[in-house]
Image 1 (cartoon, helix red, strand yellow):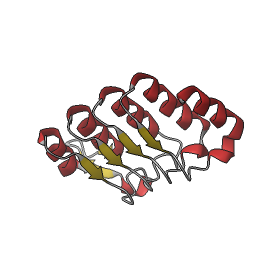
Image 2 (cartoon, one colour):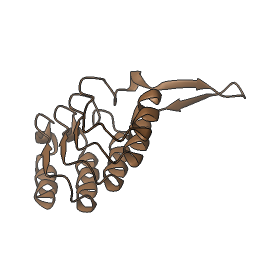
Image 3 (cartoon, rainbow, N blue to C red):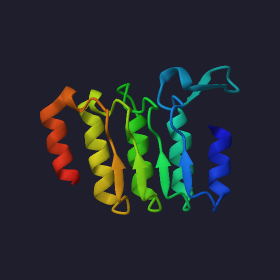
Image 4 (tube, rainbow, N blue to C red):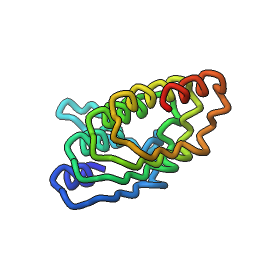
Length: 145
């Protein structure tokens, strides 16, 4: 993900980026780097993606489907929220099959991002276990729409 981040920061020609099915949000996909004091620094792949999207202004279609972004109750959705608040070039966003409904906070992060980012015209959040926190997720969806 670090190489992708570095490439996207400088690239101005990519309009569509498909990162589906890459386990970006899955815990086993964290990167561990040894620091000078022999401790480990954990670098979440979503941090790299957030930083890349903060700087890239050309991507209009982003497919992050089936990446476990909402599966664990951690910071993945916060990083996505931060990225979407800054990036105004994305017009189509596919977040299907990311377990967003598993934790009620996830829909809140998405709602907050979409309050700020009004450039997104198409959002796919299908197959996201929205039934798990049904009432709260429906209320958050109403506020997004």
